[in-house]
Amino acid sequence: KWPYAMVLGASGKRLYVTDNDRNTLVVVDVERQAVVRTITGEPFATGLDGCPGNMCRGRGASGVYVSPDERYAYVASMRENGLARIDLNSGAIVDGVTLGRFPRAIVASASNDRLYVLNSVDDTISVVSLAHWPQVIATLPLGDHDASGVEFGRALSMWLSPDGRRVAWTAAPYGREGEHPETGIWLARVDGSAPARRWTHGGDDVSPRWSPDGSRLAFMSDREERGTHGLYVLDSDGG
Image (cartoon, rainbow, N blue to C red):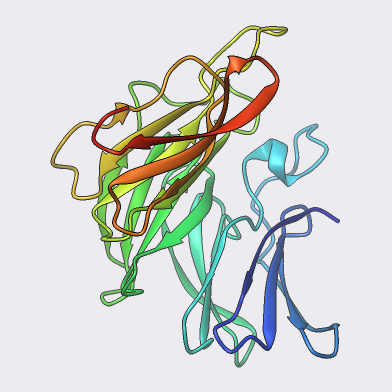
């Protein structure tokens, strides 16, 4: 009904798809192109209160990470304001951890021992240990304000640097209806040793990608011609 995110398992045999409105994780057999299992989250404690679906209420299965051995799946907001851990052998929700408001995007460290979970209403990133699950190692603020006044939370996505030391994300600031969108790219150190900083200004800057050595970021922007996006590359230490 409302597919949100999908990842291909390390074996290449299974595709894992979240459905926000149904609050489910769907497992697809790639070769057979068939659904082999649908895992449904527990009922939420409150109703929709006039909202048309879960997204409006800031909940429902969103980002997903699957362990390399495909034993566990971790699904954001399958439990309200939390990260649920699912045993893929049994299809049962084993446990979970409470994070910030409306967790959505999930990025794993290169060593697969940590998850970085973006809380879209709080404007924070929760750093969750998989080696010492369910420990939350740190909570990184992404700005000076939260996004409680923005419908569905702030429009955000994020990417981890190759060395796992920095994270880049896009954030759409508050604006007025009819204004040209100005989405900025932000950078922060994942250990919280320095404040987050806005790295780009002046356009609808989206889809950043790190170079293999982490020295540069490529991104799309319409800074030269509004509404027409082109490719830009800048040093990650600059901006």
